[in-house]
Length: 171
Image (tube, rainbow, N blue to C red; front, side):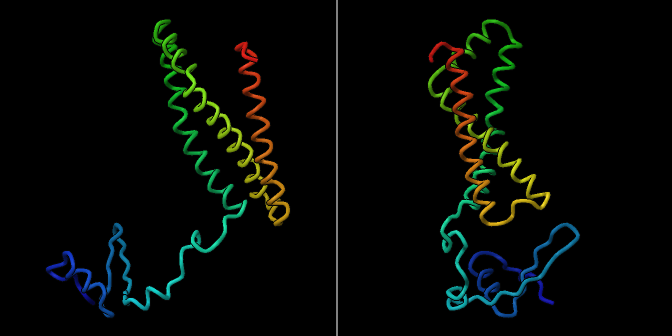
């Protein structure tokens, strides 16, 4: 069994790790694992490329990434909701200031994107629930439901903002 060399720093450590017989011991709590490195220029050239460099993006992979991104954006967007609720609790002056800020064009764009994210995440989540039941895994069904999620997201976002703008007297 190898142990860490005393001078395990910088280039010396990399040379040690590059030796064919050198293990890399990484502790994880009470557990540790040992990996053997066999590093040379040719072995790195033979390694496969990452999938995002090889494959053309497909609808299912793009929707999967977008589902994760909209989840993060929805979490960040709740800060605006929290700001609005705290302003309402602080009184009329704070609420009026918050309303003025939220009514600005940049804030309206962020809210429209948040609305799109909400509907996309909701509809794609329903799609995932069907997948959890074992339904919709056929390739043509996966594509049809993916396109349905996109179309319904745009329609529902448009209808929501049409109602908001009509109530504000803009439409």
